[in-house]
Length: 169
Image (tube, rainbow, N blue to C red; front, side, top):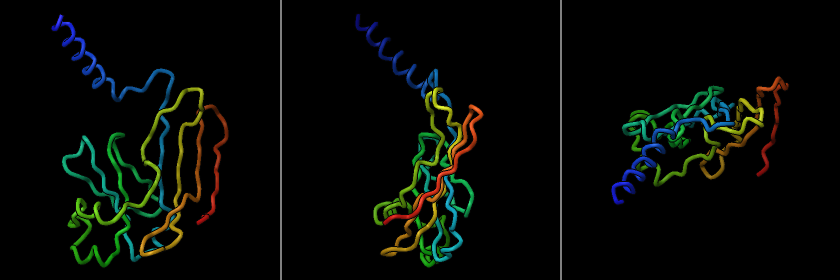
């Protein structure tokens, strides 16, 4: 009896691991892009994505470029966005020399929507979503971002939809 229970538990764990990346039946993937529209308007800051996860040995860095989609890679990766002053980057010798494990404890990351694809039910025709952030300004030494635009694409022949937003403090 013990052997049957142990085998049952092992099979359950094994099936869970093997099926973790399978799209559930009746669902489809929605691609998501996250873009920062006006990085170049704030040359005193560099936006750096800090990516960790199960498929990454330590961490990866992504220097965010204006109007280029941010991608965190594997869906179980964690993405943190930091606005780092140029003087700090220069003092450290470049973005790759900053101790991000220390940075996490002293500077909160900039909050953005998860830059990764996701699944939804087939009844929903959404097939793509692009979230565009605009930097509103600097408050208390931190960049303030807001969603300024959201572009939606559909797989049922519907016309794309563009939603515009304004910053409200």
